[in-house]
Length: 71
Image 1: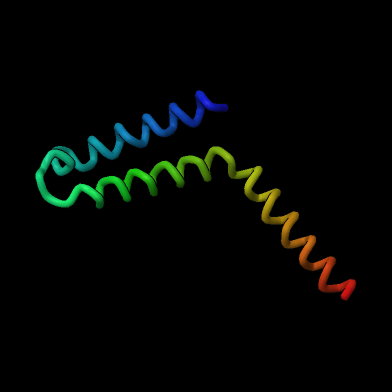
Image 2: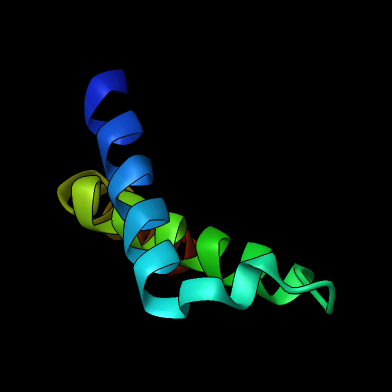
C-alpha cells in the first residue's frame, strides 16, 4: 500500500511540474504550487481509498442514525 501511495504522490508531482512548467522556478510566491500539490495528493489518496472512506462515512452516519432513533 505504501508503494501505491508513493507512486501516486510521484505521479501527482510530475503532473503538476509538467502543468505549471517553469512557474515553480520563479522567485515569486511558491506557496501556491505547494498548495496545489497537496490538493492533488489528497485527491489521489481519496481515489485510492475510495471504498474505505465510503465505508467509514456510511458506518458513522448509520451509528448516528441508530443513536438518534434510540434516544
